[in-house]
Image (tube, rainbow, N blue to C red; front, side, top):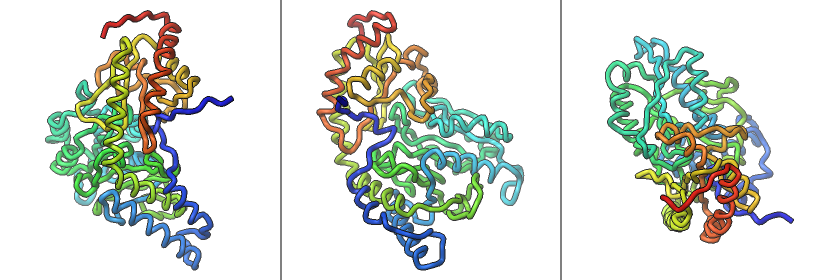
Length: 399
């Protein structure tokens, strides 16, 4: 008999909403390639462009600034690698070229694991440190883009909301520092849209990555927001369907689902955020009664994500025990091909290896309720005791 599931891993992916599913079903019979010139192709193009306008409006962008992608990983790679390719060499307006890339030390694996390829191609990659709360210091950020280093920087990237800790980053400070240095600014906003206020135009950023499936849209579509006047080089070649920046046959039905999900998520942000804050408090109050449990609480954080160290156990062990009890959670990022790695995000924030390896992430979505948190708190004590016993650890009530 299947164990009923309690889903607390929305930061990995959030279930398709009824609104998005209905919108996609209504267009499921659509025939035609949106790049074709015949009537079916023009009909597909019209549906695609209507979806583009809806997504752009919800995100505070102009429709021409929205480049459809397959999701967050492609968007991040295109933004950073493509910007470096476009600006690395001397050319009009860039007499000395810009060989440098600045990345924060807490980026998603989509950028963290891009570094070897950038270095292999000749980029100079510098890492921006974070404070112990996992948030970049605006003064340190400004210093990293000052003087000659700033003039050599092609692009700097700082994620809007960290996918493991929920820490909200000073992206406007990034945009300002980059503007002063003539560098392009990028933010991975995958965990921001629908979870914290987001407005591309107001941010001052040059580029921002978003995706559909984190807000209840379909997997397989996202967007890179590209400010007018900014043009990263393509990293995949073909028909150049999206402003010559991104090639590939477009997916109008997925775009419709993306639009429906993001419009709803943005419209209901205040309602959802208020509920998530109550759920977070409920969870933290429950965790306070367990020994040697240490939540990581950044000063400014997304209300939908809680990162917790369960000292004295391996997070993988606890995760599997919770899974057996019907609770879905996560060990840091879900984008590591099933391979357990110590979180580079938590290590960058100064956590010891043992604490970083004992950390789980719980994340809420549009339908998460008190019953979900209560189920977790009911099964957690036994699972935690067994996980610690498996490691041979005995813990008391010290905090």
